[in-house]
Length: 151
Image (tube, rainbow, N blue to C red; front, top):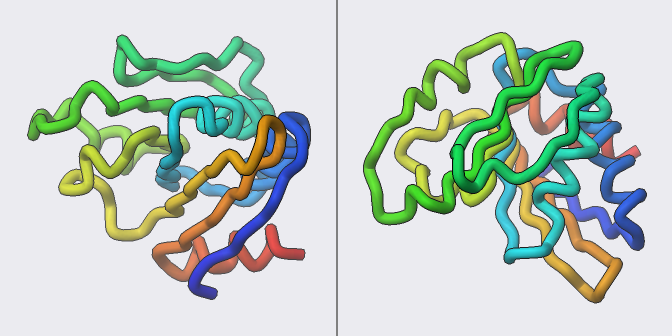
């Protein structure tokens, strides 16, 4: 499977899709999120957190770069937008090779630090409520995850 495209029509549908994904990920998995401002990256992460049993409110870590949340698995939510044109390594490997799930918004800014095996997700706003969410699996385990989501 090269890619999987799913259209959601409401914020709730987007969050439900992310909750489904949360049931399929494993410790150490890395998910990248790309999309314009307001496309739904943080909404998707909220759904993922909900599916992982995170009870705290999830919001964008723009100014802290990394926020950690406790659930059934730890969730490491990164917004690396401010690292554009920087080669600063803030210890990404410690997160990427941990017992948690790492979600990286604006991941293209830290391409050199990303693991080869990961799930890249691009979210595009079609209109005010509709989102086109495209999954690009990089590695066998992520291909299996996409096959499950496609069902």
